[in-house]
Amino acid sequence: MNDDGRRPDGLTVEHEGLGYRGFYVGEGLGLHVDRMTESRGDVSGELTVAVAGQGHLMRARFNLSSMTARASTAKYLQSRVRMGGEGRPDWATILESFCVQVLDLEREGTEVELIGQAPPREAPSFLLEPFILGGNVATILYGDGGTGKSTLAACAAVAIATGTTTFAGWRVAKRTDVLVLDWEVDGSDWNDLIALVSEGIGIAPPAIAYKGCDRSLPSMLHEVAKEVTNREIGLLIVDSVGHAMPSSHEGASAEEGAIRLFKALRQLGVPALLIDHKPKNEERNGPYGSVYKMNSARAAWELRAGEEPDEDGDSHLALIHRKHNLTPRMKPVGIRLSRSAGHILLRHEAIAEDEKLVGAMTISQRVERVLLRSTPMTLTAIADALGTGPKTIAVTLNRYSDRFVKAGKDGKADLWAAKSNMLDLQLQHVGDGVLEGPPTNGGVLRTPPPDVVGTPQTPLRDDRGSFDALIKANEERYSSTGHVASEA
Image: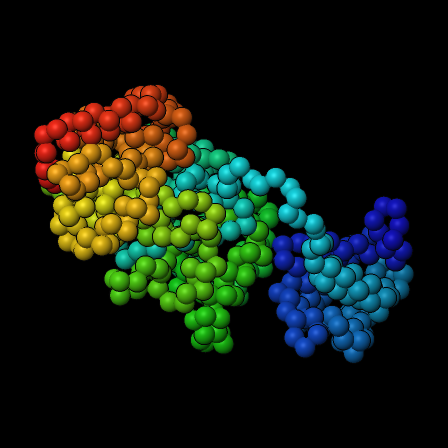
């Protein structure tokens, strides 16, 4: 290798997308190989060769590990071109150098590094906190058809592409370009979503890259990689996973298809939001198909919709955090979706009184919800309100001591209250007092930034001792009166 990075024969090879491009300095000759596979130790790819002034010479499948393939290809190229009237290039030498450099680059992999002694990260990396993780990982958004998954994804795309909050509580960590890979509808549908979401928050719609797809993502990985590299894409949206996975026609079972899909996503090296569907079995929490989807993703959210829109035509949704490898589990989020001919707007709300939405919560979340809407309650009263057994409630209350506390006595029975550390845009009532919920990270109470869009939030008090004082007052009151708490 020379000091300027070139080989002695003048051929320079570098990465391009998931393939490699070679330049023969001073000769106007270019070689490119992509769509590479490895089988039984042989590395093959689609080789394209062109020469300045004469254009395309060949494109064919080529075994870079085979001396026979190199010799036959060199002979073919030798017969096709003369350069500047000064004789044919030495194709055998050029192909030998190109293949050796490509194989070296392809097989070098990542270097071994020592880990374990660096201080742990203070917080996980987010692209859109707390919804979409940053880094080379995937976040799944799944639910029944028609619940609003693509609409929510469009809100995320607009937020990330503009750096503007599109839903109260979302914080854009980094403004970056977005690429939508769509197997479901067409560009006009996504264009409308982006325009309506932007109109809803009063901004000009951003330019978001869009690609309609008709093959599985692994089969079109190289062309997608070029777009990601050339456009400096920072978020990939896949709509939807079922179509993006290799099918049985491509020699993949459901499990293998999911594995190949996530391997392809990892090669692209950018955060991904994957839209997926829910199985018909309502008891199963996870997207349709292989468990490798949930195993491979680092975060998963389920989106549920209420049975019917309200009298204003607004839909009521619940966004539930189902998988949380890198973060604590977030509290379910209630969403009011307003859609008109001119705009789309998402606003925070309490989880609507809808059996389908409330039933999606975990037992601890349902207990917390009941207690936040009530005076302190006995264990039996909580069980009756939720239609479950007292033993289950007892285990839940004692297991989550950071969320539930004893607030006095009703005769011999303990009264329980919720001590939530989750952001709630509504006032939370405990006993006869009012507690305003702190933010999701459990840190210092704060008001939202001025660019938060949605329902205005009551200013939060910065008096962390108010809850304990309230509990003490409740203990004294209920111990002396013997008051029996009931569900609000």
